Length: 219
Image 1 (cartoon, rainbow, N blue to C red):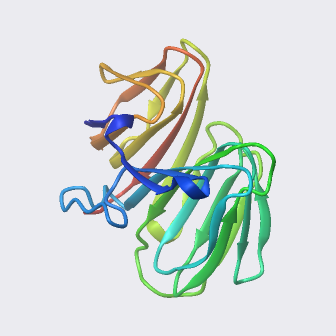
Image 2: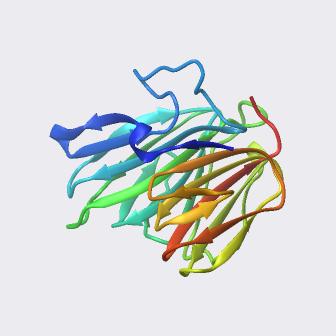
Image 3: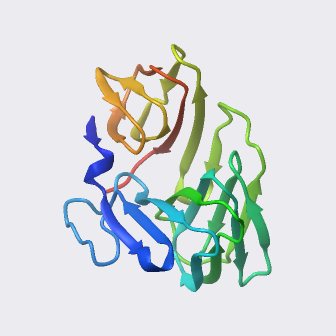
């Protein structure tokens, strides 16, 4: 298990434009040849957008993009005609496939924070696809078939335990709260990269929210 702390993430974004970004993997000008991906996961970004701030229309291709809103509301529009509001508890998936353009903005009056995971698809190309699940139930796995991956969302009360899925690659990201995992104390923004996960549990020391991305294989 490789633990990466919140304060080890790369800082990015454009603070003058109301955008603050924290990157867990190599991203943009932050290049680390030893930190390119884990399993299917190639990015895990925490984005903070001030009211009125956002990312203007930009392209993506050959990437599966999973978005989890922590607080606020995310306005999403893409070139295939989808326009949605993504709120806390919703899972949004954009399969960019052969190519798609989209806009992500905070059109609300309150700050917006969201976690976005990018995954490498099993096969390049294809047609873009979009899906949003509003208010996904706790412990309900969310499949990302194009990447052969599965997202598990867990919301825990203090003292509650949850099993970590047995899998070749499991990336555990702490959204909020404190948890103990295999003897390590993890707090908000901390992550654990677990190779060949088996018979592991996370114990919440306070009310906590976890994102666990499971991959069967990867670099």
